[in-house]
Image (cartoon, rainbow, N blue to C red):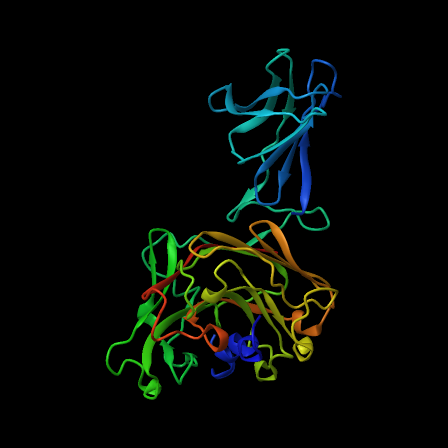
Length: 387
């Protein structure tokens, strides 16, 4: 699906900089104290917090399809509030997922035909600056280490490095290519915005041979912040198009203050999400390491990529990395996309975080005769990191 050039594309972005280079698990939290076994009249109920913060209610009523009224108890209003109406299966089972609310202390499911109901008491989940604290693989809670909501009017320079002319160019130098410019980075309406646009005269002096010159945007925590292991989550949206030429990435790169990144790919790289406008319905993760020598590995303990992770362009998608010493998992909109368990030394170092809007290359070349929408924008709603 991607050529060797594309496999190496993001890693090469950072190799040009001095030192660095430019940059669910479901856990039951509360169940009904008297989660009554289903009888002919009384439904059972249990409430489970999912690791994305939502609540799943499930249980059983009498055999046969039954209409149920789902309610939540709002402590601030001191009453039950109708949430939705559902119907159990032919065997009496039901399941529904709801958004979690901090004022909710209980859930109730009522059989509309018999008038009987059951209640699941609810303890509000622990929260920190990242929101609801997710549950680790071992059952303990994560601690928030980085909460960026992009709620201001400018990027926080104490946390983010904005890349410029020092970063390697992107795209196809023989056709359309781009250089990185700080004025393509902004914060507006609660999101980070990275833009690819047509360049003005002499704006990219190193791209004099390109037929079409553009500029692109990239930010990272280069020399600002890095972390080894944890949970990294971002909600992003790219420009809707089916035309070739656009490439976006949410990725991690080794901290060059501690790792010799000139040894790439052996030094490592974690591409949580790469999106290509030629594959408008996919996000493609990639773990770069010594296993690059074997090409695309889509299964087994050394899995380094996946080609079946759905994420439509132009829509908000949530990408999550769960990274430990012996296992790496990548999720897209809550669905497991990639699992790697080689324990490669490349993934035992501190990494920085980067977001990039760039131009495509190789099989995703910018088509001069039929270009994608320009300017194109890669939006980041938030970045949350836990450890």
